[in-house]
Image (cartoon, rainbow, N blue to C red):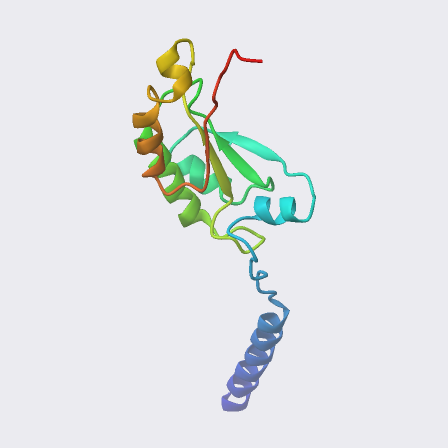
Length: 147
């Protein structure tokens, strides 16, 4: 009985050691996100869209795409949801490429129908609120009728 138990422990230890040796660690990222790394190499980047909260962020943390476009331009401007989305990305990560989260570009609701909207003074509070979130990129459009 004692020899059987020792043999079982020995086989289990060998199997665990072989399994640990097969586990491949994620590569150490060179840049803050995969999208920047690919652009540096002259490669295209692909994206998916998101606009939810924590659960969607956690799900999209393992997306095969290079970045996530967090949509607030044509939907609700909800900084709390963006914050929860980013928290979900962190909790669901790291990515398969070893990055903490996928890149995130948050679009802002900007119409640009009048001078105040076109010059940016009408959106400064939105941009400041967005920059207080731990996202990795902001995309704001500047609309002009010139040229």
